[in-house]
Length: 321
Ligand SMILES: Nc1ncnc2c1ncn2[C@@H]1O[C@H](COP(=O)(O)OP(=O)(O)OP(=O)(O)O)[C@@H](O)[C@H]1O
Image (tube, helix red, strand yellow):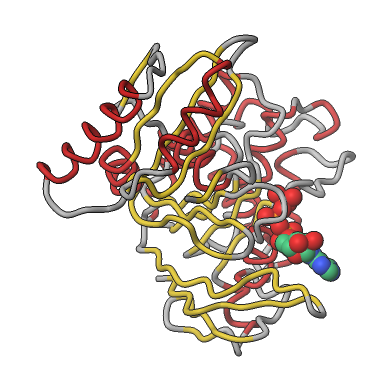
């Protein structure tokens, strides 16, 4: 339903997006991840037709980006600031926006009631928005974004400021909407554990380019095969970095202090083919560390989370070898 091909955008001489290509199928949720300045907002602005790409293109349900009016009719957006009207009730809000989309008064009221039910706000339909909690506002914002029954829904940090229960409830609601309506959802977030839980697909951006993309399990699987985490005493971190950096199979090392006297090294190995070759690389790495008399306090090749992948792929402090 969404196909983006080689999207590029420069602000003056500053390239904010350097060739973004990905696609999304109906009913799936895609997480858009990246550190500050990676280009997420720029990409979302282009895909929601607020900005024009400098090069490349995209289409939604076959409608090309050069027809923004038609694209706007089939997408929904939940911006970071919802722009709700405090002096209206939830039901009035949705009826009002339904009318803006050209619905008749009776139809707008009926659909407003249906949407309020869908997002779990039916009991507060007649309360003023000014009395809503943050979580309720987000739910109302989502209902508003669904008014035109969009094929594609964009959400920017939808769980920001919600308590853990509210976050979970909202993510489950999104999952439900995607599955039941076949809506494609693009979610920008920094909460990686939740992205891991709710998203089917993921695109990780860094400095305007994609550093990883695919299904969440593909990205994790790939990282698990080629990445190893080590914990070593801080005193040995320089020697360990040097030793690992001299090995031909080591592609990249990220290091992070995890306490006063401990360091965590995330080591990315060459992407060699075959299980045995991968094991040989890992064993070679361990032998080199042992030979250099570096104490290894912890070794983990399996417990890689999306957060680890994200930090490793987007870490500015990493040492390229
Ligand atoms: N209107 C603008 N004019 C000039 N440069 C811009 C503009 N908007 C963004 N940029 C630059 O483009 C790059 C990407 O910014 P963008 O806002 O898309 O990143 P982001 O991933 O959304 O970051 P954040 O997580 O902080 O929102 C940054 O270097 C930013 O400084």
